[in-house]
Picture 1 (cartoon, helix red, strand yellow):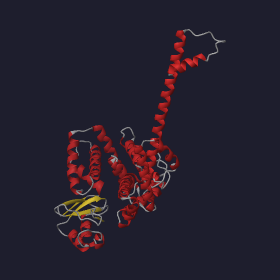
Picture 2 (cartoon, helix red, strand yellow):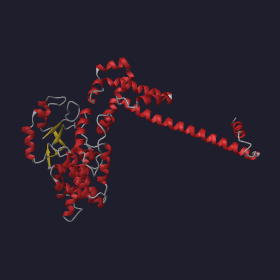
Picture 3 (cartoon, helix red, strand yellow):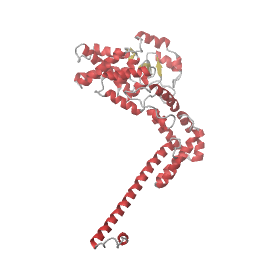
Picture 4 (tube, one colour):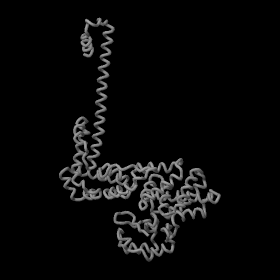
Length: 431
């Protein structure tokens, strides 16, 4: 068929102006024409495949938007694009639109309100209208959003259209921290999450710069001080995000600056730089094990990340003290004790349980607080017992009190069972 078309094409040449082609030239022209047609068909096929890939990407993004409970701005375009895709993708798209329709019934609720509603008896209305499967899918959408919000509620708020993409915060540019404080409050209120100033990506990138041995120590200290100056009452929130991204020593140094312990923070940073130079020597490993044992016993109910931050920072400060005295290998005894005392306000033991004292409080003051000044009010949310019973237990000789933060404590018994609040989390008392 192609050869025939090629012959007709050649026959149309103006024979009066061109000499007749010999047989070899004629066959070459036919082959060239067929090759051009083959290239055209291949290009058209590739263009079609590329177009479908583009449509699929667009539709997948649209499905994500629908499943977030919102409608995409390009909905009409997506409705046409999805017609070019396979039946499975069309069904997925239509299902997402149904889920969005169901979720639009409570789209004005905050995330905690959405979660409460979707699990209440009132949600049967959704099941009656859309079916049980749609109700269950809406539950999964909310559960997934809850997980995302816990990790990065700033980015999720942008995705959900709660506010526009904010200016990026970087190691060198903290100019938008004040604005971010307001956005954090909005996102925290809507999603019911704890405060987070940085997006997950920002925290990762800043932590990488802090951990880079090529970043000057002066720049690192300057960064921590600029954070403190920009958001003095909320700096620990940002430091905590850096801690979770692996910048534990710098996060702890930042918290020391918040407590007006700049000289100690400088010592920690200096010691940390020395550790990188010294490397994994045996005396370093032995000191770390010793500190972990002592600090871990005082923080039995704290997260591994918090314990690691204090151990690493104490080791760094002990190295700093040892170097000042002329023997960097002397990390036991007075240097280790001073490191813990300077970083934590000192240790205290009550009922054979080590704990860290609040800032400006000695052992006698702490015991007086527990025995005389602690009130039922601190136990109003206790689960499984009356507040008065929880108070009496805490003041007795069987309670184990352990540090979970600066001036914050959890209580557990000799079996390791922690007093819990009504949400099932450890009950925290604050000095």
